[in-house]
Length: 290
Image 1 (cartoon, one colour):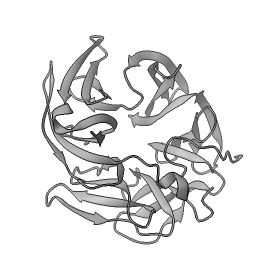
Image 2: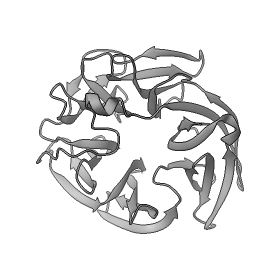
Image 3: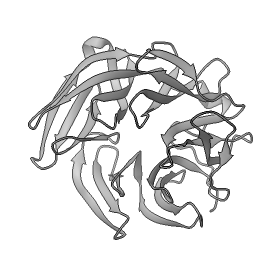
Image 4: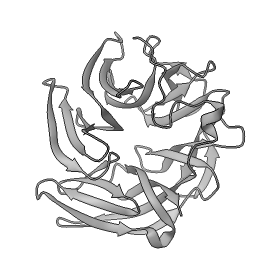
C-alpha cells in the first residue's frame, strides 16, 4: 500500500506539531437510559492537568479506560484510568508514539497506531493487555490515521490521504478495499456493521454504514451535528454527538435530536471524542476548557 505523507487531524506527529496539540481533558459521566430518554449525571474530569489527553477507550469489562496522553517527553503513550480506584497508571512507555488504543477481538491485546522511529511511518501494532513487548500487526499497511476492528480478521482504517479514505483490510492477506472517501475520523463497529461519517463539506456530516456480511453500504442515512459520535445500544440505537459544550442524543427511529447536557458551567467550551462503555452505563468525552 502506497505511503501518503500528509498531515491528517492530530495523529501525524512531529516535534513542531506536538507543541500545537490542544489542551484537552477526559471527562467521565454516568448514563441512565430509559425507553424514551437518556439522562447524563455526575460529570467528572478524570485527567485534570495541562496537556493532551485524548482518544479514550473502555475495557470490555468496563473496569478501566485506556487513552492517549502526551507528557513532558513529548511522546504519546497510552495511559490507564481505573474506574474503581480512580487512579492513573502508564500502560506503554516506548521511544515511539502510540495513539488510538483499541481492544482487539481476541481479548488479549490492544491495537494502536504507532508513529514509528522515523516519524513518518504509521502502522498498526499490538500490545498484550497483561504486559509485554509490542508486535507489528500488518507489515505492508502504512499511513494509518484511525482504526476499528470489524471481526478478528478484518479492520476498518481511515487512511492519511487527501481527502481521508476509508478502507476495509483483511489482516491475514493485507488486501484492502476502499469503501468511501472524504470521511470523518470516527468509526465504530456493531455486530460486524461498520458505522462512519461521510463528510460533504465542513458543516455537513452524514452517518453511513457498511455491512461486511453482504459487502454493501447505506449512504448518508442520518445527518449528524458533528463528525464525532458514539452509539448507545439501549432500548433502541441512539447516536451520541456534541456541539461545542452540549451533548446531544439523536433518535434515528423518531428522527429527533435532544439535548442531554450542557457542560458550559463546568468550564467546557468544545467536546470532541466520545466513548461509551459496553454496558451503556458510562460515557467518556474529550473536552477543551475555556
